[in-house]
Length: 260
Length: 353
Image (cartoon, rainbow over the protein chains, first blue to last red):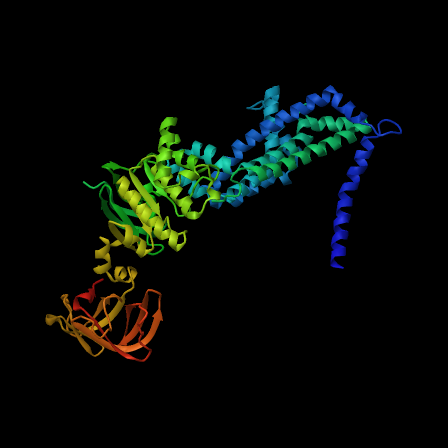
C-alpha cells in the first residue's frame, strides 16, 4: 500500500511538471496547419534579432561568470580562512538579491550611475554593459557564493594553504593553483546557474535598454503565437543542458573523490 | 653557534598564554622532538618557527638570520602535516615539483629533483597517481618528499604519523629518521607519542603548559626525569610517596619498609614526605633477581599485555607496578599473593618539582 502511494505521488509530480511542457512543445510544432513541423523554430533561429540578442546575452553571461568567479572565490576563501566569524554576515549579504527585486536594484543603479552622477556609467554603451554585468553578478551572487562556499567546505583549505605557503607560494599562486582547481566543480555549478539566470533575465536588461535575450523573448511573446513557445522550449533545453553539464563535470573532474 | 635558535619565545591567544619563555638551541643536522600532551604548546612553537603564528615575544633565528619579518613563504622551511595536505588536484610528481616550480627552477632540474625525491621515498612507480589513489602511509611519504624537494634549511614535522596505523607508523618513523640522517637536515618533530620521540630523536624537549620541562637525550629523559611531569609522561612510572627517616643517611620508609637511597635527599627533614619514581621494568620478583633493595607487598592485579605481564602490588599506601617478560613457562603471580620485588637502589629516583 505504501508503495502505491509513493508511486502515485511520483506520477502526479511528473505529470504536474511534464504536461505543460508537452503541451507547449506540441503547440510549438503546430505552426503549419494540420501537420507537425519545425517552422516556428526555423523562424526564430532565422531572425537576426534572435542571433544578436542571444549572442549578446551569452557574452554578458561569460563576462558575469568571470567577474563572479574573481569576486566570489577570493572572498569566500578569505572569509573561511581568516574571518570565519564574518561568515553569517557575508551569507546574509549574498542572500539579499533573493529578497530585493531586480527592479529595485536597477532603479538604484540608474539613480547612482546616471549621466549627472559622479560615475556616469549609463552615459555610454560600455558603461551600461558594465553596469548590467554588475547587476547580473548581484542576481547570481546567492547561487555562486553558496556553490563556492560548499566547495571550499569539502577541502581543508587552512592546511592546504599552509602547505603551499611552506613551499614558497604566495596568495595569487595559492588561489590559482591550489584553491580554484579544487573547487572547480563548485565554481562550474555556480557558473552554469549564472549562465541560466543571465540568459533569461528581463528586468535589468529592459530597464537599462540593452539588446539582451530576455527582452527579446518578451517582445516575441507579446506579438507572436507559435514562436514564443519554440523559444521557451529552446530556453528550457539550454537550462537543462547547463544542469547536465554540471553533472558531467562533477563526474569527470579528476581527483574529485579526494577530500584532503 | 646554533643553527636554529628560539629565544624567550612567547605566544598568547587572548588572555591565554600558550607558550611561556621558551628557549632552545638546535644544532645543524640535529633531530629534535617536541614531546608533550595536547595543549602543551608544542605545535604552537612549531607553527611560530614556520611563520604561521606570530610570536607575542621573543626571537627566532635560523643560521643567524632573524625570521621575525619573514612570511611563511619566505622562510625556506619544509613542513609535513598530520593530515598529509597533498594537493588533491595534482598527482604525486606534480605535488613534489610544486615548491620547485614556485621557486622558478628550470624544468630539467625539477624533473631530476622529483625523480631523486621519489627514489628517496621509494615511490618512483607511483608518480602518476593522485592522492586519493594512495594509502595514508604513501601519502605521507609523498608529503615528506614534497617538503624536502626545494632543499629547505629546516624540516618541520607536525605529528606526521598520528593518522597512520601502528605498523605503518613504526616503519615510517624509521624511514623518516634514515632520510633525515642521509640528508643531514635539521629537523623538528612534534609528537605526543613518547615511543616515537624516544626512538628517533637526537634530543627531546618535554613540554608542559607552554614551557620546556626538560631538554635532553632520549636516555636521559627516560632514565633521569627532571620533574614529576616528565617522570609521569615519559614511560610508565610508579610514583611512590615515602617518609624521610634519616636525611643524612638517605634513609626513607615506604609503608613500614625501610629503604636507603643512593640519591641525596637535599633539604628534606625527618618526617617529610618525598616523591620517588621507579620504572616498572626496573625490578623483578624472580627468586634469583639481583638488587640491593627489596619491597614486599600483596599483589592486587596481574595483566597480560603481550610481550610483558604487568603486575600491581600494594606496599603501604602505594601501588607499585612491575613488568615481567612473557615466556611460555612463566607463571604470573596471583591476586592476594605476597611477593618481594628486588631492584637497585639507584633505580629509585627522588622527584623534585
